[in-house]
Length: 164
Image 1 (tube, one colour):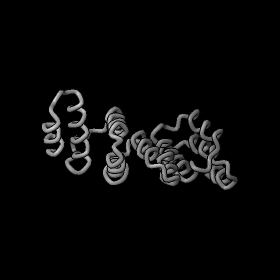
Image 2 (cartoon, helix red, strand yellow):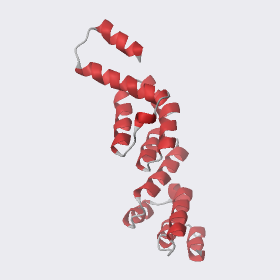
Image 3 (tube, helix red, strand yellow):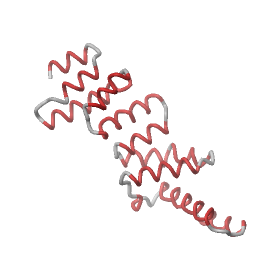
Image 4 (cartoon, rainbow, N blue to C red):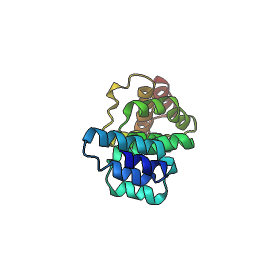
């Protein structure tokens, strides 16, 4: 670990992650790699990020680091996207309920909202437990998509939307 610390102190973050990925203890290796990525991903060069991809850290560790970087940069869409790749469903649900979801719906960007939900579902997210706000957003989206595929009068369509 002292060599990892020396590399980190020298600003060679990608190399510090690489050396940490070679630690013999699996528990120490995962913790060290995750901590390094989360602390320094926004400082890493493109070459260092490429190195991280080549050493196969595990997509979830890298995605969570990228989510932290996106949060630091103020990029809500990238943050939520990377939280889904990291399978951090609690944080993903919070962001979709309190930040990104309402913003997308307010701006009428239902296609983007739908893409976030579909992407999360494809990665294993199960919204059956969403009985709160996010569940209502998803039900609203499902109703809108249903109405696009069915010919209904505008008054019936308005009634369906109001029901959700």
